[in-house]
Length: 287
Image 1 (spheres, one colour):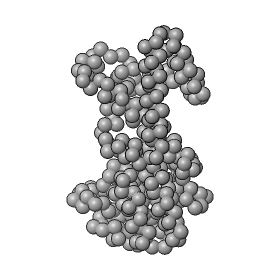
Image 2 (spheres, one colour):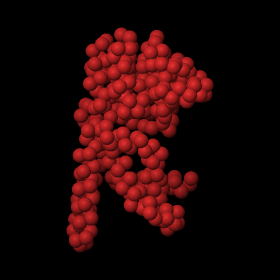
Image 3 (tube, rainbow, N blue to C red):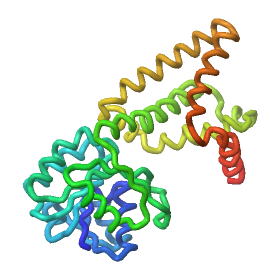
Image 4 (cartoon, rainbow, N blue to C red):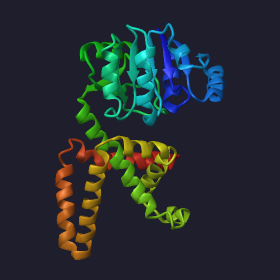
């Protein structure tokens, strides 16, 4: 299959390019960073295009891997540029900002897929790939295409609203929880704290530090998702309640912690959480 990857110089663009090349697909790539594009094409051995139009000419599939802020405008260009019958896959993490354009594309006899890879650019090619598929017009056909491109996959069908609401909890909330943790301690000597730390801090610190390798992503996920602020306000209110309980007495705080524990026990893997935690810790300790 001949595939054009738009935004190929980004982290996920590189991942998809490497994956498809390894699986014997012919790749054309375009990115606004033309210098980086040229260097990448030499390393990965794909055809670099200096314009969007050249990139999508005579291809079977167009994969859009640009940033969240650029997704809508890039897809909008494809409304007039893409030829009938071509498949277009958008892999942005938030779909509310692009879904109307994806609908426009589907009405122009284009096979449109709203796909969210539930993994990052460090994910191994030979592992089962998890995706969220937000149906645009024909979920059965869209799923067939995903199975063809990624034979080893676990794909969950989810509505637009449920997907973006879930992402507020799955992405925005964990990022802000880690930002809150980090911001509360950056005026301390972190290396001295590490010398005194036990298991919990040893796991939490690299998690908080890891998200800071892509600060722009945190900003984008927060501002583009229409449900993020609602969830973050809820987080703040819950934190305020815990602090208030801690200032009150032991019984008040204990009651709030018990309520949280009762809620978490809905998770079928709750009883295994401590064992999993120590596996994470031992893995980190070995590094």
